[in-house]
Image (cartoon, rainbow over all chains, first blue to last red; front, side, top):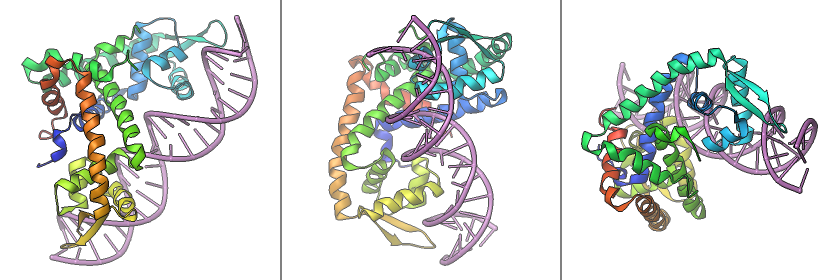
Length: 140
Length: 140
DNA sequence: TATTGTTATACTCTATAACTATA
DNA sequence: TATAGTTATAGAGTATAACAATA
C-alpha cells in the first residue's frame, strides 16, 4: 500500500494491537462482554479473594473506572462481593459467572491461537518475550 | 506481580501498545501534537500530493474523523491544501510544518530507539516482522 | 492518616448517519 | 452513480477531583 509508517515498530505495535482488539471485540460480542470485563472475569477466576482495587492495579484500570465495571458484572449475576477488612470487598465468580467464563475461555483461546497463527512459525517463540519486554511491567 | 494474564499474547500486545502510546504522548507534548497528528505530518512529509481521504485510509482513520484533524493542523499553519479533481484536496506541509516535522522526527526516533532498547538484543530483528504479521495489513 | 469504593465530570478516540460538492 | 469533505452525534475508554466509610 506504500505506507512509509510501516517501518516504525511503534506504529506497527499500535496497528497490531487495535486490529487484535477489534477481533476480540467480535469474539466477545455473543456474550455481551467487553474485553476489560472478560479479562476481569478471567482474573477473578484464577485469583480468588481478589479485591476490586487489586484487580484494577493489575489490569491498569483506575479505581474510579473499576466501579461501573464491577457493578455491571454484579448486576448480571456474574460476580459476587464478600466484605473484607476496611471497605474492601473480595470479588468472586457466581455459578453463572463460572459457567460464562468457561465459554469465554474458548473465545480467548481462539484469539490467542489466531495471533500466533498469523506469525510465521519460526518467530512464534519470540512473540511473548518481545511483547513482555516492550510492556516492561516490572520497570514501570 | 502474580498476574495470570501475562501469559496471553493478546493481553501483552494491548499492554505494550498502551504503554508505548503513553510514552509517545509525553514525547509529543512539547509540540502540542497528538500521535495521530504527528503521524499525519510524517506521512504528508514522505508522500507528497496525498489526499485527506487517502491519508485516512492508510492510517486507519475514517473520513469523518480526518476533518477536524486536518482542520487543526491547517489552523496552526502546519499544512496547506491544494484543490485537485472533484472535492479532493492535496495535503502539503508548509514551511512551518516542515520545520516542526524535523523536530518531531527526533521524538519519533527516540521513541523507536526506546522500544528496541527494551527488547533483548538477540530478539530485536524479529520485532518488526512479528508486529507486521500480527497486524496483517494486506490480509485485512 | 491511608486505603477502598463511589459519583460526577471531562476529554479523547472512534463509529454512524446525513448532507453538500464534484466527476 | 461514486467519491471527497464536512457536520453532528453517540459510544467507549480514560483522567482527575471530591466524598464517605473503615482500619
